[in-house]
Image (cartoon, one colour):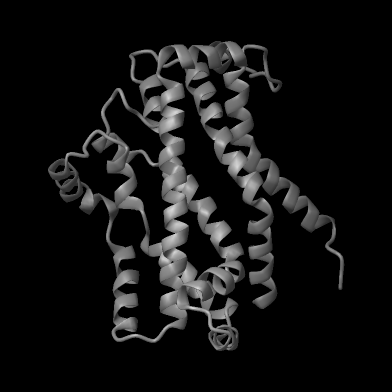
Length: 271
């Protein structure tokens, strides 16, 4: 196998640096005062005000509460989406039942419906249930997604052979035990990727929490919006909050990174 040349390494390094630059710039501004943005030649090294700016974030908005709310919402939505999507994907990929194909096509077609179309009827439903203003109004509508079902179904088709399922049946396994002990370990890389994207999407969601949550019960994105709601925007304060809000996503990526890389490499080998 030919080894990649300097051009490949150069492009990869440029891509990595370009990807990291927005986060570094955010940390750079967060570690100084907003006056650096008006300097003709901005400094390239971080200053020493990051912890002071971070402390001002917690003094200005209920940031601890917003972090807790976002963690509850994102963790719950991620767990349920992965579990229900894996169950539905296994059913659509490996089980035979009446209406399987039309039902799967219908689920895929819902991906073409803009999210904004469902905001008003969904808010009316949450109000009828008395959930408006609470975290359950954010969690329940996102317990499972059409993309998650589609993603897990496509991966399960190739990852779980019928012979393995038949062997488990011969050994006396029920369908739920086949899913838990045979299917779920085989689709773990795809589940890790889905978990990562679901956590990021739920953590960064702004529109629906803005509509349905009370101002004193925000998620982290709503808290960041409160930081820039005045006439004067303190960018050091806003970007200090943004940097703090990014840390949980980095932690999740580090935890799931091995499974995500395994899934990508497995897909590349199959391709």
